[in-house]
Image (tube, rainbow, N blue to C red; front, side, top):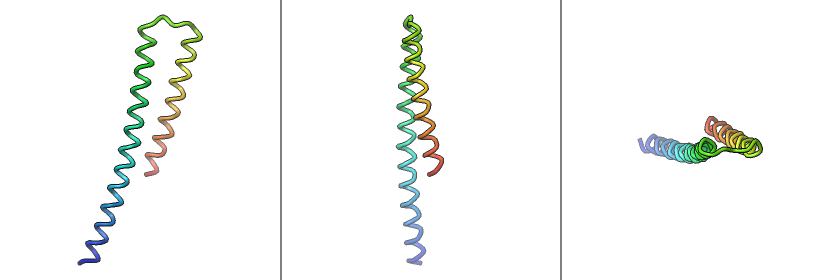
Length: 77
């Protein structure tokens, strides 16, 4: 029984660590999404030049790539 308990305890510790890592990645994704929202709101509230629009679009694309990397990392866990 003690060996089974130890095994269950180790499994629970590993799962807890995995959940902590997943939570961290999800928080990172949430931060990036919030930043993307701020960019979109800024663009909607201001008349932007073509150069500004292109720069903000590039920023959004970079943030989308960051999210994809985090999503891939999440799927590995």
